Image 1: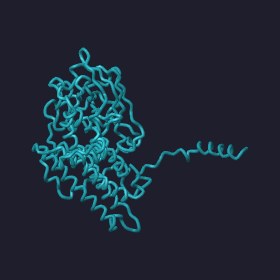
Image 2: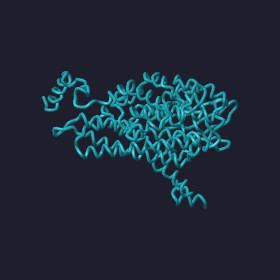
Image 3: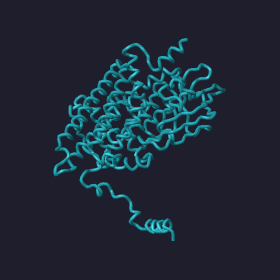
Image 4: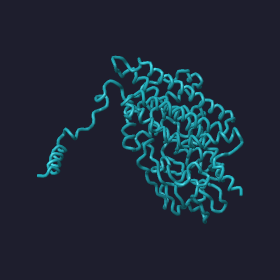
Length: 438
């Protein structure tokens, strides 16, 4: 018997042994010194008593969403994040919260204040960022587009079911070749008798693999302007496949959408979308909501770290007793207060009709930057356990990365603000801008 075959034989025998085939220990058994995130920590991040700035209705929304997320989602989120699958069994629980539809009034939608909708977004993200993205795409992008740009018939037809999460929607703007430069999209819509033919491809579409209704943006081949269409998931020529191998927002089912001669009847063209500028009405609200996702993520990370440092002991003392850990925890807490107050002010500016695109963009870019710092500090504080999704911080660390990028990268949002405060647009390299004028 050769050395290789002997080794292979021993390996085969070992593989049959139960010693090598045991499931992993439950984390509470493997590491009994600290409580995992499946039992979510109590809220501890409202240091400046932000709750006092909320109306009784907004406080009630926060309490209701927080209780649901801690009870229904926290126990299963790590498992589904690891599998990169969506927990469809929690959808009825989320539907019962009546937060889908956010600020939309009528049609079975909750008609929340934008502050109330933002608070619900942060409370979902505090426990699980993927769930908040699922709701944001469905509610603050797809549903809001129908509410702001749809016909009365479209609103009556689609919004009530979407508000109850009986049907799910997605929002398809981004393409393989066009992310930040979304206005240059290539998907086309050609007028034919009784409707339109859509041809093209979309990428990174959240909820795209299982959405019942897809809000698709395409270029009208006659006017060369961007139009919007409502496409049903069973439309011939439409295919949606899951994007695999993500390191963040793994529960979110992002899809590659292919449209090959997809027919859309006239009644499913959104009459209020006649140029790319019409998408800004939707993005103004959704950018505020996206800014509240990293606020919620940072709240959850702080809450987790605050509990962990009190429970975990080294060198004969709780980690919370060490000066350097207290300094990091205080920095995280300060970030949460500042992010929360900027997000709150954005909501108030929007409610008063004063919010500008630059203000929304600065809020989203600055808040995500501070959140990145906050979750990085949390990762350090948890040491080796900081890379385990079981203790939330590693998952939050990864989930924040796509949020830092989507709805406008940090750089693009900074340039939107820069254009507003200087009067100069600097999105294209100067050499290309000069050449285009020649």
